[in-house]
Length: 184
Image 1 (cartoon, one colour):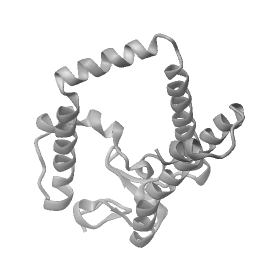
Image 2 (cartoon, one colour; image 1 turned 120 degrees about the vertical axis):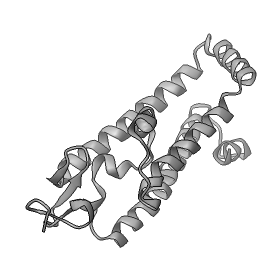
Image 3 (cartoon, helix red, strand yellow; image 1 turned 180 degrees about the horizontal axis):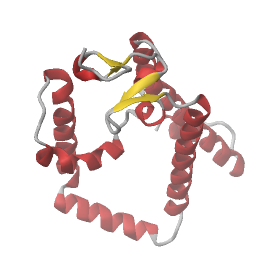
């Protein structure tokens, strides 16, 4: 009764039309993106990952990279960045879900600095396709549960392919060394 046209539900954040989703950034219902746009964003994401992986592999073979890796390992062991990073990520995970699970809203001044960590969110489908646009909750859960397995399978296939290419370049047969690299 008190919601604007096209809105319903708690806090008027549910769209009446099935082809729309509520955008918290815009504050109203927005049409779902087209499939072409979503596939395009996914391909851009995959391309960026492939370019970064290729740059990493190329960087490892540069003569000065061994010194840099040793120096970075020494600094990391002295400072202990890994535990600090884990604490920040854990804090972000807990504080970002408080509102959804418990209905608690933290003060904006307190949470504003955590917005940077949203860039590293693993919820890739919210970047390309908002959850409401995928379909029913069962479909969303299925997609959210299966995409990590697909990613692991893709990365595993890339590792096997790289190991096979290196083997062919070194004119070796499929042996224990290749099998060890694949399992590593």
